Image (tube, rainbow, N blue to C red; front, side, top):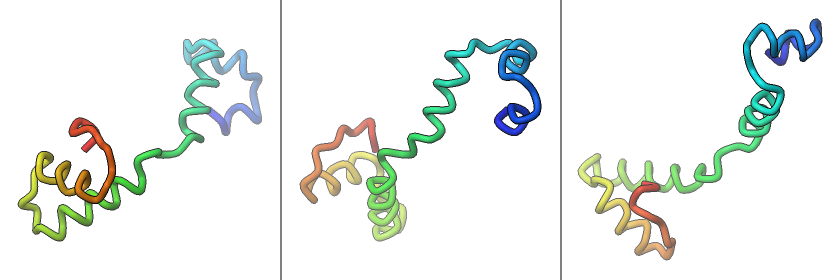
Length: 76
């Protein structure tokens, strides 16, 4: 929709798509925010590969916590 926005008014695009203006700006903000768990994901992936895929979420959680991070098991 961002490409079309240069050619057409935003109000017309939102009407055709059936979206509210606030929804459009919320999604635009979310896409620009980035991933707050990017570094954690890299460490989890490294731990998983280091143990040849044998660690599940419980053992990965324990390993991350032993490195000093306070992280919920649901985040893993």
